Image (cartoon, rainbow, N blue to C red; front, side, top):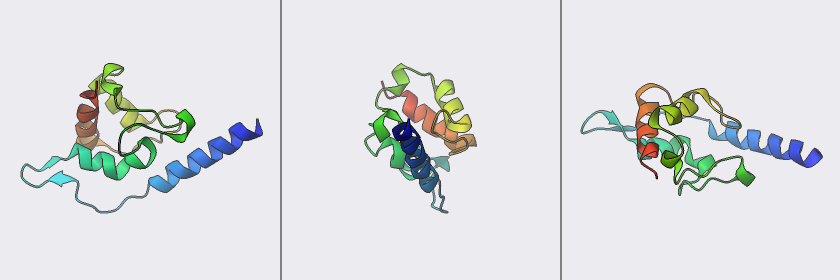
Length: 107
């Protein structure tokens, strides 16, 4: 029980530490559309890994084939509303839609 609680506290600390935001430009300047890969690297890769393979003893899921399990809309819902250890609001609006579409292609 103590190990589970410790794991939860460490996982939560990692997530909260990764939630910091900078004013980095995440738009493709040529088309003014969000760059989903850049957004993922800035906001998601600290937990899900730059290679999308996840980590944290299963706390942060492997996303390499997430599009085979979830639709674009389902992925966007998770991004906006959060799920399990993932807090809500990491990305919103067009940014969330762009990353959801990009992840939905991972099959």
